[in-house]
Image (cartoon, rainbow, N blue to C red; front, side, top):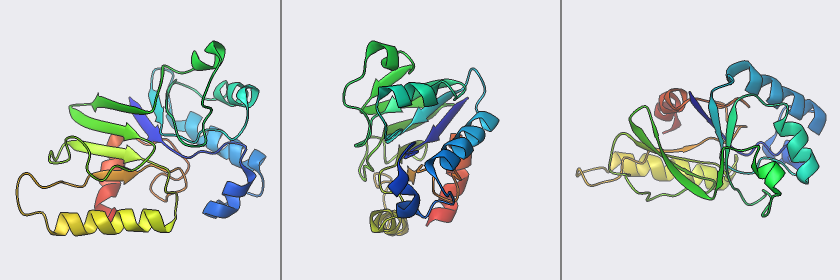
Length: 191
């Protein structure tokens, strides 16, 4: 089973305040993120981390990755390490800036950054998953754009606007890697 999450920011103290996360320390945040991850991710599952995994250096990444079950694919974000040793890189099934996959017959575009006009956007079974915009005005703009585009969809070639922010701090993600089915169900409530 595939799961998706973004912007975990392990070890990043300021993100707690920035996002209004319900944690008093980075240690508490780490423990809850790991607990939630391991509650739903099984050994053979693959979790796509859509950027901004960890604020620390390689030893911190390795320590945290060793606590998380399942296979992991990193879609790099702006706060992720730019270079990795082979030891760290081997803890991931893949490391990319952008990736397209099939998830049970549905096309999924994976990038840390929201792409408003993504390849396959005219297909109802194509979804663009991203992060980066947290709970900022950029995320509000993304929701407004999605609502406006969906309301004005007039032709088959118009975008379905299936862009979903999978930031861990969003209510429908709730600090837990989510399946595409869970995310698609939440899309209807996103405007």
